[in-house]
Amino acid sequence: LRRLVFCCLMLNLTFVTWGILQERMLTRRYPRFTGEKFVYTYALVFTNRLWTVIFSGLLLLYLRPKISRTTVIYEYAFPAISNMLSSWCQYEALRYVSFPSATLFKSFKLAPVMAMGKILGNKTYPQYDYMVALVIGIGITMFMTTTDDISLGYDIYGEQVNEAWTGIMLLGLFLFFDSFTSQWQSRMFQRHRDMSLIELMFATSAFSTVLAFITLVHSKELYLAITFVIEHSEIHLHFFMFSICSTIGQLVIYYTIKNFGAVVFTLIMTFRILLSIAISCFLYGHKVTGLGFIGLMLVMIAVFYRIKRKAEGQQLVKWQGINEPEQGKELLQEWHEHGDI
Image (tube, rainbow, N blue to C red):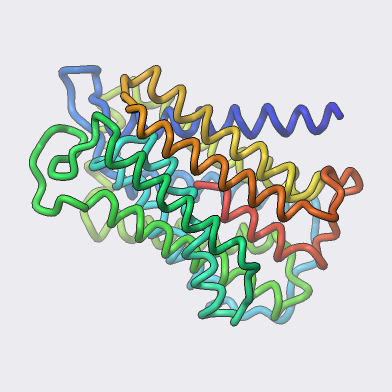
């Protein structure tokens, strides 16, 4: 029971803190009110992936899982590219939509995951999944179109933009790239039975780190990002905590699903969405209308209904944990469906 409480606290602490820091770094000035805005989102992607490489590399050395002999190195490049692009899209979207809207929008992951599963793996899904996806879509639409601080013709800084739906388009691309990442990695698990999740995490993050660094150099943002960080001391702690929360959060996801199953993990992460939205509204003054609140509740009801249906006939808490070779695909699917990083 203490391990379950630990997982619940750590998932909420790391992901809520990660979300607060994400909004602070990408939508506020350094120093506050009078300074500049940090606009180098690929720098965030690079630091996140670098820390993940370091931690997962240490885990490889400590756990010493069996290294796959059947995988070809280029196979890791595809999910690495899509993973890097999905992260960039979700960070960049915060320039155009509020953090509560972006957080709730990610609940719609179910639809593109099912579509990509059909395309890449010819998978079938229960009928209630389609209904849940539809209800979530309706709820998100109600929330985003009635929230006071969202103007579809302006970005979050109040400056006019060319495309009214830029933020929503970026979130849509985030869902597309993230669903491709999860389905491709699931296919790798199916084809390479001797591959461990830690190995997959390390290899994908290593590719993403290199690609993000090349992008920073090519776009000439590396020097600008370093200069910004050096000149603004307040962002030092934010950068460090942002990357640490991201990395530790991924490790706690792995530990939680492996030890207690997908149902418990989904319940914790659903509560985390509500907590993140509430804290963001409190700290940054976002206003939610009555109709927006109804939309939020509609999404939560749909998510909890899906959890209930998936849990039917199963043990709620799998105290003995799951066997990775057999349940690696389930672990990976839940990881991507409910993790934002």
